[in-house]
Image 1: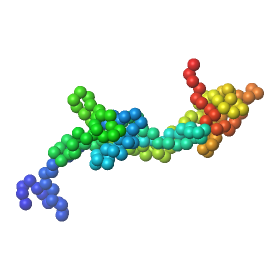
Image 2: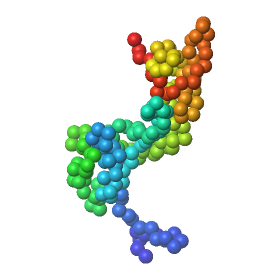
Image 3: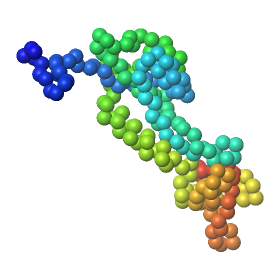
Image 4: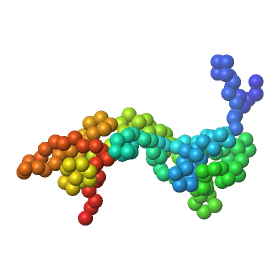
Length: 187
């Protein structure tokens, strides 16, 4: 046994080659984060695209969809060492616009940030972001209450939301389709 190595049980530890991989930032083409992710992963690059659920109104129905936490950006892990993959194919990958740089230096992202985002992503999956927040002021744009102001209370399943509408000098709870209300615009 050499002087530079030591035995611990059945494992022999010796000086190892230091891994030189880091996370970097990719700028994608508009609304092509998933396409870029899929194509980069197909080429063998480890990537991460933080997603979170959000409620949207689609065809007058409240549905939950996944959206990118950072539109037009995703993370890629690249190795600077001699065993690392060539960076050249990245810029010609479908969906990718460019590798984000500051001057000549590629923008590094700390591993702790990636870990934090993964933890937050898990938390967001458990509780989707609401399209409307309780107490938010809305305007009814469709149906018998069209043109009236309302206050959002709660989503009642996928087909209705409960709002408060001022009628006869008091607030009345009314169930309406999510597509029939809009957030009030600041005036």
